[in-house]
Length: 128
Image (cartoon, rainbow, N blue to C red):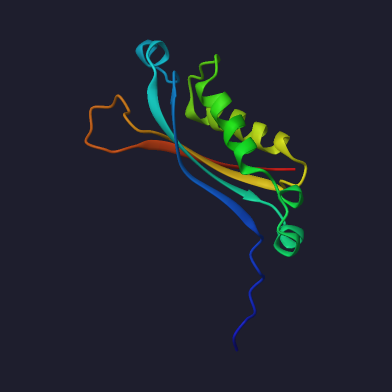
């Protein structure tokens, strides 16, 4: 017997936001800006916006991008990607009370590791 799956919640997806920041365990990572890439999935109902076609009825993703950029490029340096991602996720939740949850991925594009790899990163989910 086939089961009926629950519908997935609506999401705003932000992919491949590239930013420069000074975060990492090593002193050189906190002294010289390095590239980071961020993805964000925001759980937001799109029922009203889908009907009205009005920006006021949804979350302004330009404001979300601005808040993420402020954390990554801002004055505070984080040692851990986990702390950087958590701070950015908190900012996303603060943008608009209609954001029910956010899953945020942060990747370091040039990790200073003695291995042949393209990125290292973390993915966290925060909700109200």
